[in-house]
Length: 415
Ligand SMILES: Nc1nc2c(ncn2[C@@H]2O[C@H](COP(=O)(O)OP(=O)(O)OP(=O)(O)O)[C@@H](O)[C@H]2O)c(=O)[nH]1
Ligand SMILES: [Mg+2]
Image (tube, rainbow, N blue to C red; front, side, top):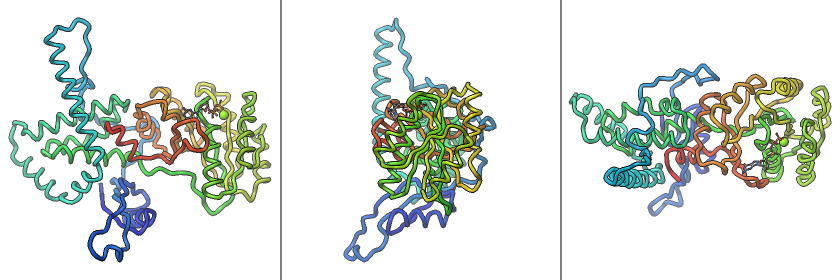
């Protein structure tokens, strides 16, 4: 992994410079305003600093072909989880209570650490050589016995592992994240160093989120596909509003959802409120004609009927629709899934919808769960780029670009 800091007058400029230096795949770890010090601080140009990183080229796992190395294998309840037993003795209950207090204390400290992750990253960047040298010399000591630092590091790693599992990160992906970190621990690095290494690794695994992007050609046609009731239509209304009102784009809406009575009506209502053109596409053959009417629009959002991933007939209909778009139009497909869904179902959904098209992921209903593990699981399982998350029913406010740093902090036990 290469990690570095870059400065610019604006956030955008700092990110641009980082990407120039590290390439398009650079992932932004953190952005912070710089408070210039000294008498002539107002003469200084740079006002933002980004920490950016790239991972050595690794094939991203597509669907089932993920190679998992299980070189760390704690079990979830080791050290961290305290099983509740119905017939506890007083002494045992007391031990458990103490363990619970300890666990809470270390989690509180962890929350504090995560709050200050920027400082940890800074520290990690600055004395990088000394840490490595230190690790090296530690390893060279070759003492069979674990040092106190190593023991503490191991305990900390187990706690983080437990938190990751509590947040429903699948065990194999938790192992993927932690697989190299064990080396850091064995090298006797500090807990702060371990935490910032895990944080960095997770950010890199999530990758840079990719929103709707505009190319040379107009209009851009964006399909929203996904299971029933996940929030496709509501998300379209949010996206339409953001692009029309905030970005000043010319937006039009199409509904290809003719399965459910009133489904098209729902989108039409939003189109009326937003004052955007709206029409219904009853069959794939009508799609290009409908789009031809909207040739001078920037963005056409196409709503589709939600279907169960087990319903192959409906899947074929959507596939036909998505593939019927004339090649002269730029196309993007977003798979909308709920963050509350079960891992096993999401894995099947990721597979079935891959057969329709390559997609980017939108996770909805983040407000309805506190375990975000599936966001990482499905990102790693599908290899698809992340785009937006939604966190409520309010149109247009409850949507944002995938906020990687925030999600990673939560997955690691932050608030
Ligand atoms: N809590 C919460 N509810 C949401 C969110 N997004 C959508 N919803 C709600 O989920 C329900 C279904 O939303 P729709 O937009 O109709 O879902 P859909 O995917 O279009 O459904 P079908 O067209 O039937 O497949 C509605 O009650 C929405 O208000 C979200 O981020 N959080
Ligand atoms: Mg709908």
